[in-house]
Image (cartoon, rainbow, N blue to C red; front, side, top):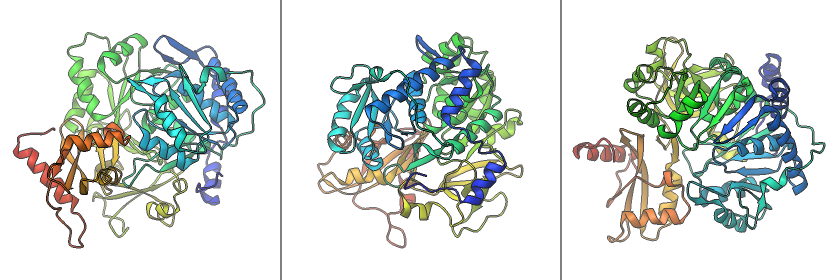
Length: 541
């Protein structure tokens, strides 16, 4: 196991292998087997380009050989920041074959996050598009490369300029190193509540198990067609069952640049899409658009909704308006995934966030003293199992808080369990804002705000929003009365903070309410802004 990673205790690893959870398969094996079985069937389509299973397998071998020739070695970390495009799959499977480790950044990340990921992981390479959504990633890469000594290679899809072109790295295949299923396959990023995201090591064994069970529960097969409208580097559209679960089942992945109905609805009609996944704010947009768009959506069998709490009232509209089954999904990049089942009664589907997908998932719901609560009571969700990590990468001190002594992960989610074993998410223990599925660590944004010379103190909290569920509000104690919100937002952009993390609203105050022990009372701040919005007759910003 890679240094800095926490392994499962041997007795658990032996048990998961004995029970068939961990089947000894790597991602390279998986693709090779699917290529032999499905050959010229289309694996992924994006715009006018499509790629078969056989071609994806061949190009992964060629690119892995090119990466090796460039000097990328097994266990080297490679930060990948790619939008929804076929090259994402070519790059990932090439790195899986080589044994190098992708670190999945999001297209919305900017200098603050990317420089941290590269530095913390000691990345040897950074792979980017030339441009996406009007942003030139090459200028970002130049800044990062200048700042991170270990970063030897920047690889670009498109016009590479001073960097290495991805297309030049497809070479004749060579013999590649042997990869083991127990090896770390890649790193995902947490939606953590403190500071910058933690890195989550996922092994071939544990992640492929999650794909297999997800594909079974979602009833995927070779005729399934999955439309990816969310950024596929997110765990949810990557594996629940997502694009990788679809490839595991031998189906077809259809990539969209955006979740807009104007792009997604024509793709559903044209490609005969059977399943797709959204976050709650997008469901509202799709439901409103369905009545005014003249597209045939009848092929759509399942609409998954996850990433944030979904209103039961809106959930009831999915089947009548879109004509498909709603499936709620609640999970985390650290592991545990819960689904409502496709044949569940409507009351279960609209009112719960599903139940654990595996019989080997272990669940505890506890109070502040780690005592299990009474059935039906709200408490913090703890979990462990064959695809839930035992520790973050290089985070020994944090792991001591985030995991119990017997290996249960503290999710930070407040839940209650129904008599039938389904979970209902009631909120968060941790200081985190869920902005329409995008997780914002308050502490990270506060640290950026405190770097401004005119900010004496800062507290970032969630505020209610009818559309996104939550938005962010920064309460600022200024050093000077002349400080304005626009100046602070501009300051954050200049520091390379991702746009979704920039506070939606800024309130200037003279002091913060405090708890009995002298800490900032964020519950009181949330109440203040909620009452302010309510008195102004607003449910959104």
